[in-house]
Image (cartoon, rainbow, N blue to C red; front, side):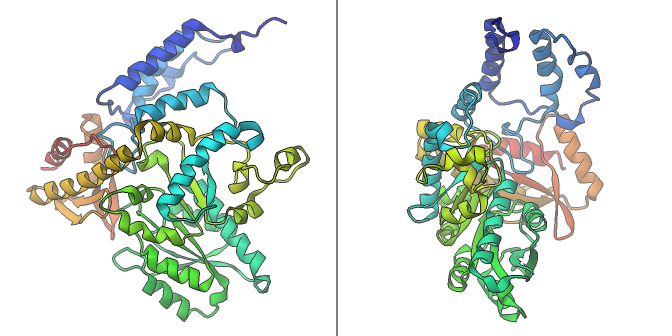
Length: 453
């Protein structure tokens, strides 16, 4: 049988790709690039997709010179918008290994070695959170998938344990500060939100207790969702107090720690996360503040059997992966079947660099936020909106309207000074720094602030 060219090893193309990767990995610092502010890209794509294929050198050159430069580099120390990412070099390299190995991380039968390594990281995160022996879960694509998967289990457990809820609308307690993916999950799983007022944007046990006490049908409130590090301001809810209420009343307690959960490893903020020991489920995204490549979110359960009861998919062709009940199949813990072994890049980096290096890098983001707050307070053109809780800093330019912030943000990117986008805080448009990259320094912050004079 003649080899198909598509599946034949091409040494020249391999060397060319590896050289591109070497150059990208060696960038110091990583260039910011331009994202959506570049001209139309149709011309750059013209002619590449054809019946007979295009020379790989031409395709790669078009990508390197036109397409890659139209993507803002999330791993640049000047990327301070949204929640950045700063994958370690080790994690990026091993992500190449995962891709080149064509690993399918769906079941123990197919990928026991990969899943065992991923589970080592999940166990590390579970221990850091204070969860008991036996806690576990899987890696999913991101916080949205993690929240949705966990909340499905919360809904299903309530139905399984409480037959008297049949025919009732189930309700989940949540604050308005919760991530948008939580509201989306509620719509998908067809439950109602009970909004709890916050105190300075923080969900507290006293407010949760007050809402439960005043409710006409508290039995239909079956879960509480808290946030450990709000995306907009880095605020950590009262996890210990809320967790105590959830445990005492038998309600599922889920914590969205997608961004902030990494700070449970920090030397200065770990006390804020003591309440994670009370959760039934929580998520944390390594592709955010645990320095892994996209896309990688860790989903953990106190009692994984509850997740298996909701998520195990049954089909005749899948019986073989469920023959051994002691084997760990990631497909049993979230809304997915086929999955990439997306936790391996973090596993390799964590093993190579060590836990202490991760703690130091997380602390660097917190320290930089505190330093940025001091620089803002000393700067004549700007004002600090609120002291940083984790690594997010909100600040304003007095006298500016919404359009001023938008045009300023565009100029910053055009001039390759930084990628900083505005946000809305208590009805007002303000600027926002999100620090994760350990190499973002005071010089970069000062340069950005000076553009607001």
